[in-house]
Amino acid sequence: MNIVGKTVMVDIESDITLENGSISMTVLHQAYISQGHVDIELVDYTNVMFLGKQINFGKLRETLKNIDINIDWLVSEETDKLFTDEDKEYLQSLYIK
Image 1 (cartoon, rainbow, N blue to C red):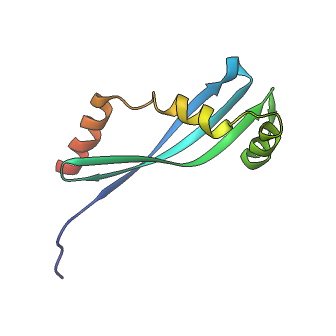
Image 2: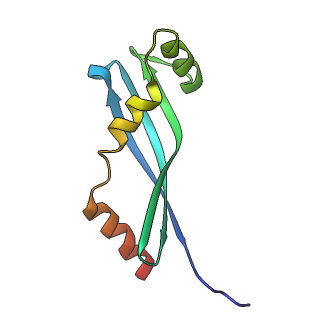
Protein backbone atom coordinates (compact mmCIF):
# COMPACT_ATOMS: atom_id res chain seq x y z
CA MET A 1 0.00 0.00 0.00
CA ASN A 2 1.36 3.41 -0.97
CA ILE A 3 -0.52 6.13 0.94
CA VAL A 4 0.53 9.52 -0.39
CA GLY A 5 -1.78 11.74 1.65
CA LYS A 6 -4.75 11.80 3.95
CA THR A 7 -7.95 13.78 4.36
CA VAL A 8 -10.19 13.76 7.42
CA MET A 9 -13.92 14.24 6.78
CA VAL A 10 -16.20 15.48 9.56
CA ASP A 11 -20.00 15.93 9.46
CA ILE A 12 -21.34 18.99 11.31
CA GLU A 13 -25.06 19.59 12.05
CA SER A 14 -26.30 23.07 12.93
CA ASP A 15 -29.78 24.45 13.55
CA ILE A 16 -30.50 27.78 11.88
CA THR A 17 -33.44 30.18 11.87
CA LEU A 18 -34.23 32.60 9.03
CA GLU A 19 -36.56 35.51 8.44
CA ASN A 20 -37.49 36.33 12.04
CA GLY A 21 -38.24 32.71 12.86
CA SER A 22 -40.56 31.93 9.96
CA ILE A 23 -38.10 29.37 8.56
CA SER A 24 -35.97 26.96 10.55
CA MET A 25 -33.94 23.92 9.61
CA THR A 26 -30.99 21.73 10.41
CA VAL A 27 -28.13 22.10 7.95
CA LEU A 28 -25.44 19.49 7.43
CA HIS A 29 -21.94 20.55 6.49
CA GLN A 30 -19.02 18.32 5.65
CA ALA A 31 -15.57 19.53 6.56
CA TYR A 32 -12.67 18.17 4.53
CA ILE A 33 -9.44 18.58 6.47
CA SER A 34 -6.00 18.07 4.99
CA GLN A 35 -2.59 19.28 5.97
CA GLY A 36 -2.90 23.06 6.28
CA HIS A 37 -6.36 23.30 4.72
CA VAL A 38 -9.99 23.11 5.88
CA ASP A 39 -12.83 23.19 3.35
CA ILE A 40 -16.41 23.26 4.67
CA GLU A 41 -19.33 22.58 2.32
CA LEU A 42 -23.09 22.66 2.88
CA VAL A 43 -24.44 19.27 1.81
CA ASP A 44 -28.00 18.78 3.13
CA TYR A 45 -31.07 20.30 4.78
CA THR A 46 -33.29 18.43 7.26
CA ASN A 47 -36.10 19.27 9.67
CA VAL A 48 -37.18 22.18 7.44
CA MET A 49 -40.05 24.16 8.98
CA PHE A 50 -41.95 27.03 7.35
CA LEU A 51 -44.41 28.94 9.53
CA GLY A 52 -44.43 26.04 11.99
CA LYS A 53 -45.13 23.32 9.42
CA GLN A 54 -42.66 20.76 8.15
CA ILE A 55 -41.89 21.09 4.42
CA ASN A 56 -39.50 19.57 1.91
CA PHE A 57 -36.63 21.96 1.16
CA GLY A 58 -37.13 21.66 -2.61
CA LYS A 59 -40.81 22.56 -2.28
CA LEU A 60 -39.93 25.52 -0.03
CA ARG A 61 -37.34 26.70 -2.56
CA GLU A 62 -39.89 26.51 -5.39
CA THR A 63 -42.61 28.26 -3.36
CA LEU A 64 -40.35 31.12 -2.32
CA LYS A 65 -38.92 31.45 -5.84
CA ASN A 66 -42.45 32.25 -7.04
CA ILE A 67 -42.43 35.36 -4.85
CA ASP A 68 -38.83 36.32 -5.70
CA ILE A 69 -37.23 35.13 -2.46
CA ASN A 70 -33.94 33.26 -2.89
CA ILE A 71 -33.81 30.72 -0.05
CA ASP A 72 -30.34 29.56 -1.09
CA TRP A 73 -29.02 33.09 -0.56
CA LEU A 74 -30.77 33.36 2.83
CA VAL A 75 -29.31 30.04 3.97
CA SER A 76 -25.87 31.01 2.68
CA GLU A 77 -25.98 34.32 4.55
CA GLU A 78 -26.81 32.52 7.80
CA THR A 79 -24.42 29.59 7.42
CA ASP A 80 -21.50 31.88 6.53
CA LYS A 81 -21.64 33.04 10.17
CA LEU A 82 -21.45 29.52 11.63
CA PHE A 83 -17.74 28.75 11.46
CA THR A 84 -15.17 31.01 13.07
CA ASP A 85 -11.42 30.90 12.59
CA GLU A 86 -11.22 29.15 15.97
CA ASP A 87 -13.62 26.46 14.72
CA LYS A 88 -11.42 25.91 11.67
CA GLU A 89 -8.32 25.73 13.88
CA TYR A 90 -10.05 23.08 16.00
CA LEU A 91 -10.95 21.10 12.88
CA GLN A 92 -7.35 21.38 11.69
CA SER A 93 -6.21 19.96 15.04
CA LEU A 94 -8.25 16.81 14.28
CA TYR A 95 -5.99 16.19 11.29
CA ILE A 96 -2.89 16.21 13.46
CA LYS A 97 -4.23 13.72 16.02
